[in-house]
Amino acid sequence: MISRRELERYQRQILLFLEEGQERLKQSEIFIAGAGGLGCPVAIYLAVAGIGKITIVDRDIVEQSNLNRQILHYDRDIGREKSSSIAEKLTEINPDTEVNAITAAIGEKNVSKLVGNADGIVDALDNFPARYILNRAALEKKIPLFHGAIQGFFGQATTIIPDKTPCLACIFPKAPPEEVSPVVGTTPGVIGAIQATEVIKYLVKDGDLLANRLFIWDGKASRAEEMAVERNPACPVCSTSKNTTMHKRVR
Image 1 (cartoon, helix red, strand yellow):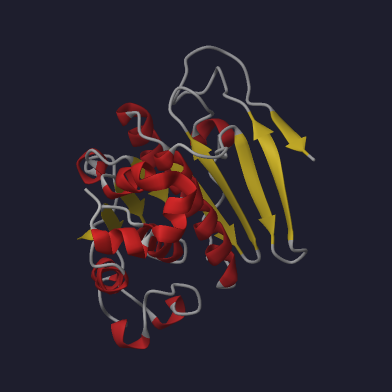
Image 2 (spheres, helix red, strand yellow):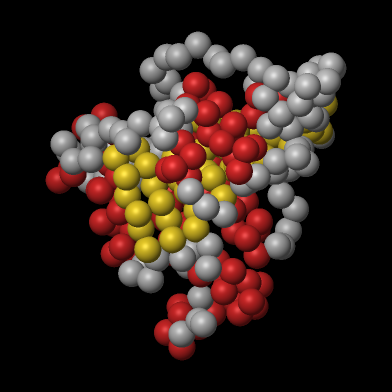
């Protein structure tokens, strides 16, 4: 049950989705893959919204070059494991949110155990091989995947619902070449907030998700567009029949 203190803390959003919606958030567990540029804003907004449990996984330590965008890591955290650094801040932000911080590289052998019985998976990673692993885990477990990616002033997001929308491999059949991408700190702020919003909407069953749509953010022009995406009947990950993915720009 929601306590009196929680009723006061969340009163502005309870006006939107009532106590029933707030209870859904409290009873939910979200798995966040990545404690970096995207993982930080996603985690902040899910914690302040009242998500009951956040599991966050990252294999890296905090470096000086992270600090222009990874807003839950401070100078004093340099050299610390990112997962423990972010867990400390989230607990301060909302003591009612249980934070399970894990330092590990996500791979084929451990992804199922790491994700567990989460109600949603947030892709806050920076490489497509690991994203494809998350995608397969989401499909196998029938858990929605909230994808986000950034580069420079640009970003993208979509929500993948197993058996209902294109999977990540449908939308991106081939991984882009790996490189050290430039990025300004505001871009993950924009995309991370969108991912967190998608998670909240899904859990409280309110609003239209970015399902079958790829949101595209152009920070240089301060313009957002979207593309309609369809399932690929020939996708080797989520289907076995033959066809191709279709992309149609939505104006």
